[in-house]
Length: 344
Image 1: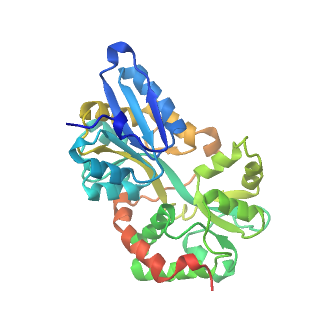
Image 2: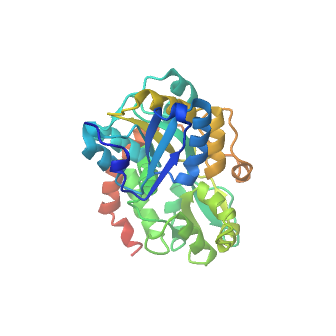
Image 3: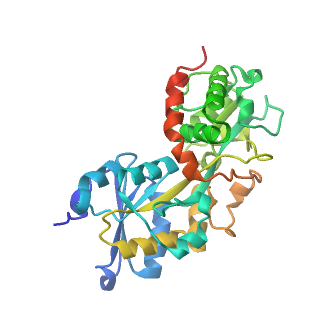
């Protein structure tokens, strides 16, 4: 017997988008690493259009393990994730199934979806350099430049083992090979102003405080800081830096995705596929991009005005599946060079 969805809930947050009585039996169950406030507007729009009730549970970690442990009795239909590495790992765990959808293939560029149709990107974010407006004059940079000794003691970043950092290192492996990527990582480590610590916003705060002049971070954090009325000091942090899109005049800036996959034992498979297709639609892409300051994957859907204000960039065209394949090696390099110890 399949477990009750409600009996399985023991995570940080739960949201149910109510349905009318006539549609009460039509539902879809979502396990999400994306925060409820980001997802709720999308699910409300989906409910309004289809009458399908959306049940959402949110957690910061462990959802893949949960789905695997639940096995054939899992109530999960859909997994929403924040990183291609997590999506690829879920595929390798065997908890996903392919979705042969012409709509998804039409809406989502090939480089942002799995070649076996087991995961699909929804939005992109760029891994950029936040540069001090006071202490950095140049208006362009490459990732390779970050290993230049002129930046010694001037760079801040989060842990080398964080998903976002691993993705960037993996992209360097794809473009330059393992040996050259290791040399680059050693150079970047030598230029660190402090041991890698904190999240992306903490790196911008460090630039504001004068601890470093450059910081690595995702684009959407700028939007979160610029609009943070609850903690207005973050607006000051954001105002102290400008975004540089590395390699945009060459091979392109590294991007990652938020994305989704269909759970292997999805009890509401058809409803889940309808939701996946809806999330790739122009309506949902606009809601998603506006709500989290990310870039839509669907061509023709514009990012928000705040996102546009950061400038235009060229995204790296390499398939994210290739970067996902290099993540294990990237993680090994982080340990080999003892990156999280900081500069000697």
